[in-house]
Image (cartoon, rainbow over all chains, first blue to last red):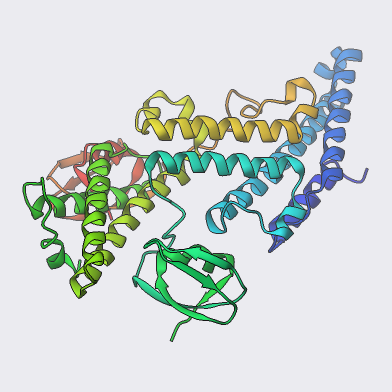
Length: 194
Length: 216
């Protein structure tokens, strides 16, 4: 082991520099957990076998403190790692909607996928409670209607006014912004700016 | 607001006049701005939010009726104005949720802050904390030695709970003259009505809660 916490730090760095969500590093996580268990056992062993030295001998005291600091650092890095991935998934729920894009789905652990669904339910329940879809209007509205071009076939949608509309590729439409805002964020249609 | 003249033509039934409507919108806008610039969650404006939500519903019905008769230019203006009000409402809820998620554990452990949340928000906070804790526990904390599993404590009690940063400064405008106000032991400031100040948040947070100042 080159340095305590090295593995854990590596996955956190990978996460902080990535532009898309990197694959969940289950192996590194369990390695970090093993390391904490190992360090913890070391600390306990020293305290049990040489309690006097741990208190009076500076080098032994330093060893205890060092091991303890290393294991706490491992834990903090792991907390940061998981927490930031959770934040990423939460933001996706706001920006893209209730369904994970395929590349993100592949990058998440089973637990993370579960977290995403649970967060979706939580937010859904709250939005029902306040009777307003809060994920609309992420930016202040400027125009009531906008012109959009369909980038990929998206079947039929029903507009707020109750009209049916079939979105075929390359067709353009002049629609209520609120009807297509989520489709723009998903990349299904694009906003035509003149 | 550019469309304020169209607001006065909303002609709300059951209200004492358009002026009331305008005040509510203005008040909501200010509550939203305060919320945006304040580092911690403020008191939920439940009566105000309820009134505005009800007005929005009412106006949506009116607009829908007018659309059935054929859309006029005035109808479009009303629709746009409605969208703007709805943006305010949504953004107000959202801004609060962001802070609630960020400081969820701090909020739950602090009885005074809890009372500032609406019942729905409080439930959200509780469920969110549970969800987060469950995820972290199952992902790796449960694998750690028992003494190290705690989510909120490292060395001292609850030292890993993210709390709002009160040591920040905010721009504010004084609504009612307050006079000499003690910022800390060494410095004080004269707060005059209508004047703008850049002040440390900590000493003035109570002024914000009783609305003698607003954030800008």
